[in-house]
Amino acid sequence: MAYRIHFTAEDLARTRPADSMPFAELMAAARALQERSRAARLDPWRRGVLGRLPDRARMALSLVPADGWGPTFLMPAVAGSPEELLERVRATPRRIVAAELAAIAEHQPVPRWARHLAEDAALREELGASVGVLYEHLVGPYWSGITDCYAADRAVRMRQFLGGGVELLLAGADPRWMRWKPPVLEVRSDVDHDLRLRGQGVLLVPSVFAKRVMVSDDTHGLPRPVITYPVDDGTLAERPALFGPDRAAPGPGTGPSALSALLGRTRAAVLRAVVRHPGCSTKELAALAGITPSSASEHATVLRESSLISTSRYRNTALHSPTALGAGLLGDEPDSPGSGRSRAVRP
Image (cartoon, rainbow, N blue to C red; front, side, top):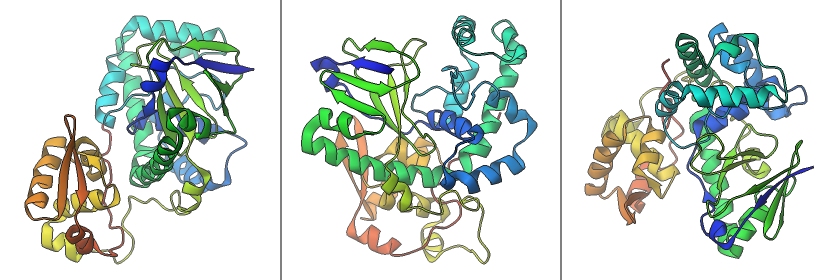
């Protein structure tokens, strides 16, 4: 069986790699945590998470089985900070909650408590808090390493795009799970379905936790359909310690670096983020450094005036890249705790 996505010329023109989507990764991580046949590379992460996962997180986890249907409203595949996405979850209209749970119930059992979710505002608030706690434990501590994988995967996709346009991008994203048969993209699936895009295009989102391609359509409020695919195996092979001991925790003997002493901790983190993610936007820079967009803009201005970074514009977006002086100042400095770490989500 296959999930067939039908493209027009307009759809191809509007198809692109997407910005990072923390809750799309959370959905994949929730599934990966419960899978019996799991990738060995995730074992250190799984052991660490299961050893400290609070009971409050299990409420959200119970709605996302290892295999099967998960509610789109719970972990939406859209861009934004974890805080913004958590507010979106809490603000989901009751009719969408009811419609999604009813659709899921046609294919698999729904937890008994969830049957009252649409009518019970307090229960929905409790569920939103559970999503936040789940993110803090499954994805948040590893976000810096995850975004590094995204950046590496994007470089691969840009090469594909430059070599053969969107069609090569679709054909090469994950040949194990997707096959491009112009003008249809066939995704291996447990259901037989046809999705006609009608000019929307799709967003292509890499995932560190996903083991197969997942499609989120626009039925329940997504701006456009999203295809989540596993990042390239070579990208993960270069980061064997990604899911080792908690990357967010300081190692023994770690202290403030010379760069932090010179620039200040936050500004040094901003420079590190630009050097490691050249061409990042101000919003992306804020997420990588764990600060607000306005603060990222202020620090980027100081770094630019000091000739440590340069800024160009694409349409209405500022894109920041390191200068030779900025990259040389960072040198071979090892990762320091807190560098590029996302802020925790507070329920």
